[in-house]
Image 1 (cartoon, one colour):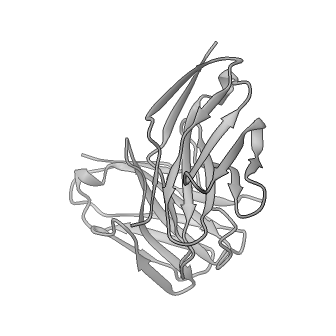
Image 2: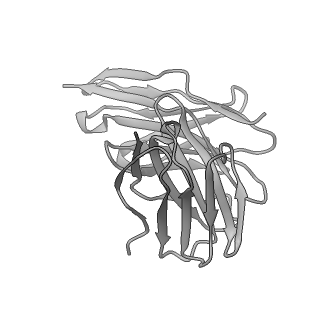
Length: 114
Length: 114
């Protein structure tokens, strides 16, 4: 079965420190991987995606993600966290099928303390 | 450019009542999706549509019906609401067949069934 896992329900980081939000996936074929962010009472917003090419992908708000094929991981990173980064983050994989559906992980709540 | 618009934003229903959630997109996207978001479970696909006049079941379709009479609109119906359908509902759309694209999400509908 194709799936996405986010092993941490919550990640707590002090402002100014680096942050990592973990994601692993299990799909057949080449994965198309995404990160979305959800702020309170809002819909999901696109952060970044990996389709092919360079394993380090840069996205919005200073975030980046590293694709690791051997470890089937796509961790989200940022060198220096901001309090405004506090939100719910979803990793997702898009399936190459007739409907091109996206499967979402369960989400990781990122909390940045001042 | 409004993107994806969901109405209503909030609704409280009594058990057994019916209602329709409307999703409208102005990006000429082929594919549209309805998800529900529950704590700790991420987003689960209810129904989706790959074009005008077509619909298909997702992961959790029971108790819901959908229609796509116009390309820009995707309606989600609850014929007889149950407390288990208390959730936040998100509509999303994407370009058809282009798996390198992610989704554009609406801001959500918070539904409470009492």
